[in-house]
Length: 298
Image 1 (spheres, one colour):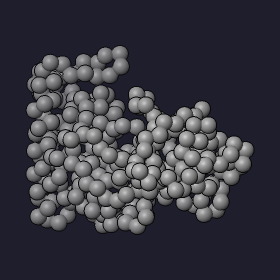
Image 2 (tube, rainbow, N blue to C red; image 1 turned 180 degrees about the vertical axis):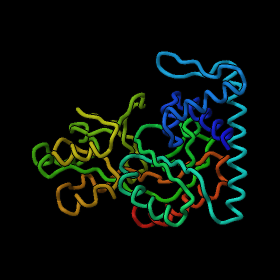
Image 3 (spheres, helix red, strand yellow; image 1 turned 45 degrees about the horizontal axis):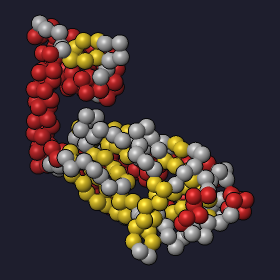
C-alpha cells in the first residue's frame, strides 16, 4: 500500500522535523523517504513541506494535511490492533523508551525473548535520562522511574525501586562519614541533572516521614552511569537505585551512607498514551516486563 506508506512517512517527518529522522524511524533511507513525500506533493499538486535552516516545517496546507493524515494512521493502527487481538498474533512497530541505566541493565536484555515469542513485532528501544515527549515522539510505552506528571497518559505502577546513598570507603575515610542528614551539606554530592531541570534535591525517608534535602556538588551529569563511575572513583556521594549498585555494595567497592534514612523508593512503571491502551502488543509488553522484573527491586 504505497499511499498509506507515504502517509506514514509524512506524519513521522513532520513529527521529527527531518526526512532523515523520519525515514530512520521507519527503517528506510532518506532517499526513499524523500521520494514518498514527493509522491504525495505530486499527487495533490501542492507543497507540503518547507525547509528552514534547521529543519523541515509543514506549509499551511501541509499542517492541515498532517492533522488528518495522523488521524488516518491512528485509526488504521487501532484497526490493526483489534485484528491482532482476535488473531493472537500482534504485529507492527512497538516504540519503547526507558532511562539509560534501567534500559541497559534490565530492559534491553529482555527484548530478544519478547520478540522471539511475538515475531511479528518490531521493537524499537530508545534510551535516555532526559524528559521525552511521549506523544510528539510517537512512543507506545515509556518505562519510567519516579512519579509521572502528565495526566494525559495512563500510568501503570509495576514495582517500587529501592535506592541508596553510596560512596567509596576511600572517599569517606578522607572526608568523614556523615552522621546526620545535615552533614551531607559538607560533602560533594553527585547530581543527576539535565537541561532545564528544576532545583535539585533528594527526598529521604525519616522516622517523621519523607524529608526534602537540598544538596550540592561539584559535578552533575544527565547519565546515571556516569555518576556511579564518579562515585567509584572516590569523587563523592551518589543517590542511585539499589539494584544498580548492588554488585559494588556486595564487593565493598561502595558502602551505604546513612542507611537508617535512605532515599525514598522510586516508583517503576509504564506510561502509555490512552489511545494505545487497546493495542495488544503494548499490553503484552507491559505485562511481560512486569513479570520479568518482579523481585529485582526488592
